[in-house]
Length: 295
Length: 297
Image: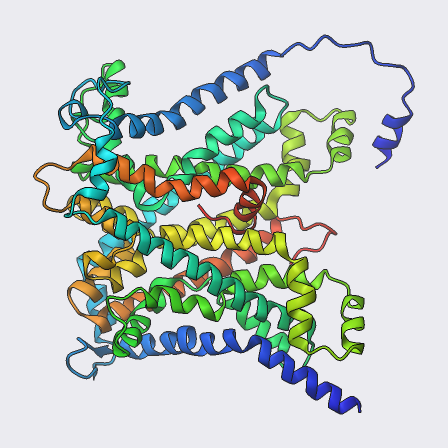
């Protein structure tokens, strides 16, 4: 504190330093360059493989740029009836979008309840919400699976979607933090007008929460899009697969030889929605990562 | 009047939280209790559960696959989580210096994290291909003979660990956000006091970002205990059970061998392990975690 005060007082204008990188900074820069190349080279390998013919893909040493661009690999994903990639893409979209809608709707309702009302038991119940944040899915998946199977939802997308409509602990926590920052006065006018509590939530709180909702939507989308374990438990038939399980199945299916070019094309296409989200909403996207630690 | 208002508030409260309340009872509380019950039974779904007391736990104790799964998961966790954390912190600090092309490096190192889950596993399966893969090709520049990465029990888990480093970008972004929150005046004060880089890091920067570090450590360990995708997609737990991860073992026992009781016993052990780890990290963190305002939780 004192130090800054002193620093501020220092009157002598610094002689204009030539911008010169020190050896340490240069070393750091070189290190960053090397690591960036190392990080990006698998991506390059993925893209170039996806455009190679089967013969070229097995060549050693690998060619960096495909001799002929086999764009047909991408088309084959959709035309080859053994793969059903298009349908699985659709399934993944249905699951991810419904999960986002369900999670955001339910979690914001619940978060609003916890943020606005102090009543007997509310503190205790919120502790309960927090305590389920760390609950590992594998610890509860067996009874959940038996439950959904018992009500006839096996081999359907519903067991992947429905749980999202009951709120997600972590998102409830994040949204509650956000709603608590809104001043109480916001609601007074509405209360005097006799608006229902739900109207206060729907017409006053939600419109103000746009950025926060965008952040948690991105988080939920990515999480749902990448989820493998639950689809593996519930989905049996290829038409119902989501992308992750469909791609894993492609690995081990009827091909005599693993079709690496097709698999890389699938890996690229399956990552596109996430890359697109990053491109259009980078700030919210990064915020989502920072808040949730999703990988 | 006042009582009526209280009533109205209480009603509204329960109305708003009802989705979570229902979900908690049906999708969390019931499964936790049910799997506790199943863990003391023999249960294959076709027949009703049969109470067998502690037999499942006794069997686990002598089950080689179970110990294999613990060994593989711990090895993976203990190596991959701290190293990924340190790498992502190191690169966050490097980028946080005034390097040229800062935002390019940030995006480039984060970008791979967007190829996640099964897509990432497929890509690395191919990168580690012994004949035509990128990894052995790069190693061949240095005269290293082809290594059968995923086909050899000695190397498979190391291949998965190397692969996990590729996802350090997310951690790096989190640390960058933390580093940008370190007040500039503290760093300047340290500089004026003549503290070197290491001392500044040790006494100013790290204490300020320690909550971020702790958060990532907890999430990292808990996620890593549940590693499944790589085993399911790439190795099927092999070779020789070297990547037979804990959750993969639960999955196989429950959904391939239909031993729901036995698998539930393992699920409960996981639940307890996660609770203990979380508790230990939170407890010991008091020593090194600085929460703003001087309050240590």
